[in-house]
Length: 113
Length: 116
Image (cartoon, rainbow over all chains, first blue to last red):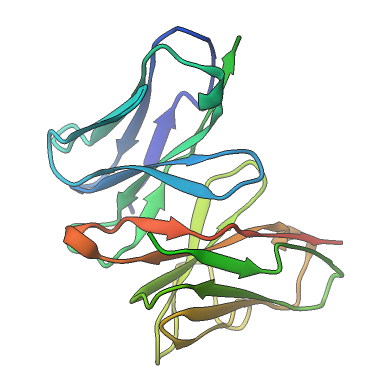
């Protein structure tokens, strides 16, 4: 059974600081997705990583995928308050499986002024 | 990306009753899914809604409890049957386009259900 773990589960950081959220998964997959969820809202797609070594950047966020290590990272550069949200990674259940995503535990990010 | 709406946005229901949640997409999509997000938790896939055939349920979810309809490529419903307080959750539908080899999914706004 595919398991997806994120750490940390909660992250409180100051504005201007850098930090990384980690997403580990337990079985082979080469497709991983990052989502953002604001309180009381739905999920917003942030990044789609479709191969080993893929790196995507948008503003202060950068995501990468290492399929051999079964690890994805979401790096936050010079955090601002607007980045406060819960971040989820999601992994395709198996190579070739049809659109079934397994979500990570989520990381609640709170950026303090 | 597709525009997805859900009805109702929230509801408070009594134990033992049923609630049907609607999911409408503004374009035809092949894949539609239903998820549950319990308070403070991650998302769990309930089932894949298949157009023209029965839904495919994940382990721990059964058709009698969560019947799903998918009459066409833009619409699906999820019913939460014989509700108990443990069913209090956010229910989200999502769609996948399958474009460019990606299984990226886009989510509706969710239905927040409270069962008393």
